[in-house]
Image (cartoon, rainbow, N blue to C red; front, side):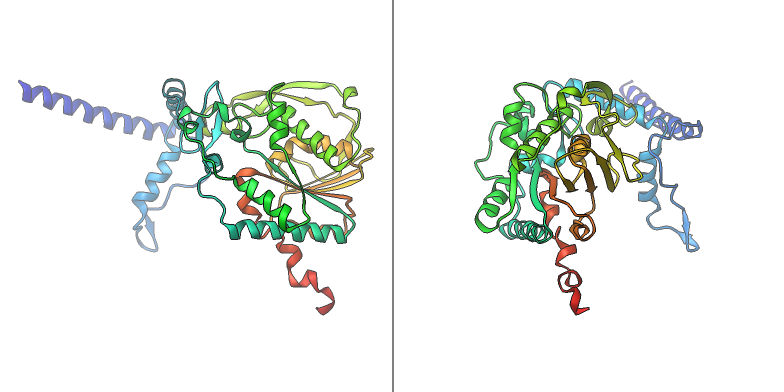
Length: 370
């Protein structure tokens, strides 16, 4: 009898397994059922006249991203993990009070895998080269690092990461120390400013890795104050409450469901115009024109400056934002900027190595020799 029960149980699970495989496989024939992940075509079994050696692995990878109702299944599993076990996935950390954090910030938060001294020096010298080049072209350069969310809000990180804080200097502290000692680079540390301001209002999206409209505006005010530049009267600009922000961490955790986050931003209607073919805030190049009185701005930025576009655009008569690295500081040859801002998020400091490549190129340094 025991043998029969065991056999029936084994048979049941085998049948269930194959039924589920058939369901998710045949379900792919339903229009839209496997559209959660777009892109790659099914790998070919035959290549160059013979069976592909890597077909099994390639098919497994392809199927894992395309099986029917994948988004819904992943969403249900993620919801279970977040609400019951307070865990995310390999890209998202579930914190307390609904906060999500980006896994890529963990090295900075735990002060692990730090930049080497040579890397700190390379970054410092690259920024120094950029600053000197800007000064030669009549512009002042300011370096600004946008803090990781868990730098400003460490208290909502999972308790297991807060029990043994490291006393080591952070990479950003080490870089600032190098800039102070070895260069004339002007920089602004936003961490104490944002940490103080968070007592008044939420500054980062709970479900996104970036600062929200309030946090971005506080960073903007700090930058303009540091540079001694005039700001428009924002009291005459109405603040607008919107619920259209899609959290990047929510998308990573729940690929099958579009979720929107609340945000509050200024209404800039009629205050500036785009002079580039604007598509999204993540365009590689964005240019604007306005009646701003702060001069002209050339800004090299990442996704954090997307929330700064409006503030900078109404302040500077002309603005050009660039996302390419190495930074195209040679644009100063044609765009006569008064201010150059280099903005990058804390977790990506390492990508500043070689960011001066365009201006240290021999052709740019010695054009008369060509």
